[in-house]
Every structure is written in structure tokens, then in C-alpha cells.
Image (cartoon, rainbow, N blue to C red; front, side, top):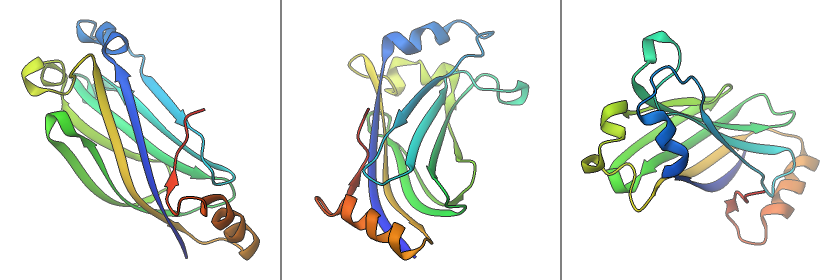
Length: 157
């Protein structure tokens, strides 16, 4: 299995979060796609400030996913953090559809004392490693793409 380090950060402006603060009927969500140096690799976040589906309403959730074309199984060990709020979740995951993170009750997420939003933004960071099985030519192309800095860093488009 090939293993690669990754590090992503999503800085969500408070101005994008505020429409969700007082509107419980808003079913929209925020999302962020990241391109990468690895051919066919796509990472993304989906952020649900007040939940999704009826049973998760009133709670803040983040979905994180890594998708590598033609790879059916990605094994990932990573940590999702929101440092300002002292929030950290360590995960060992076989990613097929992403991993959901419960962040906080919506009222706590928007409570300035809880520090999820600081200096006009919420910074979400994910760092770790992912492994996958692939053919030799794909593994070589990934190693060439990542050789410059030994650590896969997602690049924003």
C-alpha cells in the first residue's frame, strides 16, 4: 500500500456563516473543494452549520472526504481540528463516502465564548496520512507529483 501525508485548511469567513445563525429552516450548506498534486485526487469539506435531516437539526456538522479516481478504498488516519475552540477528533477511517464530524450544538457553535469563530473566521484543519492500493504506474505518478516536498499538501484551485 502506498502512504502519503496530507494537510488541508479551510478558513470559513464569518460573513458566510452568519446567514445560518438565526435561520433554522435554511437547509443550505457550505462546501470547499481542494485540488491536489496527486492525479485524480479530490478532497472536499461540506459544512452544515445547523445540521441536516430532521434528527440532526440544530447541530453543526462537517463532512470530510478524499476521493481518488479508480481507487475504491482509501484508508486514512487523520485529525480534524478547530484550534481556537480546542476541538480535535482523531480518526482511523476507510473512506468510501466520507466521514461526518459532529462539531457542537448550533447555539454553542455560534457562541463567541466557545471560540469556534475567531477574528471573523472559523479555521478547520485536517492533517494525517492516507493509504491506498494501486498499480505501479499510478504509484509512480503519485510519487513524482509528491516528490517536491515529501508531503502532500492540497492546493486551493
